[in-house]
Image (tube, rainbow, N blue to C red; front, top):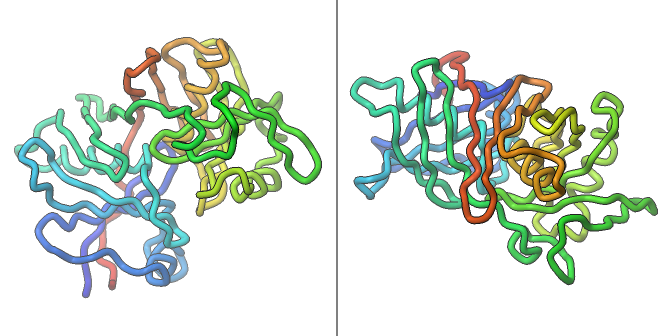
Length: 276
């Protein structure tokens, strides 16, 4: 069966939006997803957003998120911005609307300049809810990796994140430490790993080793997690510009039970059909 797709990117993160609101088709299996995610055998993507019809009249659509390794994950900040931009570009569609994600409801707004703002929910710090193996909740934890101890923050943005402070973003050990922390035993469902340099109270540099993907040009939930972690440490203001290898995002959080807002671009790359 061949289905249409729209390939997009958010801050350089390649997203495949597959609109299945008019069908009851199930998403492809793991091996097919791997083939589709590889540019040598498919359109290629970091994340595939499987969009389906909502039975709730107040929700524009539901979506599921799949990584290039075939795994299904709970959330993708750059992906949901691409879904929101895709939907808002259709005739008669409102610029502000709700979406339903695997991790909960999302509010989306597409501005006249094309930037997309989405509410990413309230961050979760309780270890059992991240999930992260720790006796009690803390802003920083000591994590031992291959005999070396690192101070890290752990937070969930609907998916688990580990955040480290680094002095130099270019020489941060993303390729070696990233996969070692991703699969660390204290993260029973694995984790995304963010390497953050504080450039000012309103600016950070960030590289992210994504769970099930590897280092990507950008990670929306990773940007949210890094800013939230920095705010909890008293290092960052309410609104922060996040510079990633693929572009810039803006993260705003006022603390407490307020949702984290993520703002950035969502650009169409190409359209086509893929064989499921």
